[in-house]
Length: 164
Image (cartoon, rainbow, N blue to C red; front, side):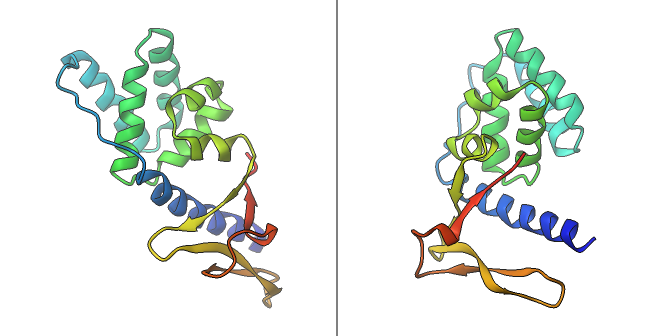
């Protein structure tokens, strides 16, 4: 039980860090030339993700990609990141394991692709330039404290690998 809580807590910390790191590189796209039907499809996908209906979101995304409407997915991903939605990483993960790896590779920022591919990544909190690091000792529940380290940013001690 304690391990599961630790994994969930680490995921939440990592997710928040990823959204902060990625949001700095996303620019808002203009929807002026988008048809009203595409705008409605965008809203439907966005709302499916916000409400946690990931099965529907994955189905919609696969369908839009097959129909050559990838711009809908791109706009939704950009809006999720700009809005700071906590569901963005879960949507990305569900796409990755739901035959949508090509969609993640094509429409998600580089940081998401690194995480989903299982590469080692460093998590840096930009506001304070702190790297996410685990403490060296275990607490009574056999867990390690996660904290921000402002001095060490280049060692293996701050390298994280996300397993999907």
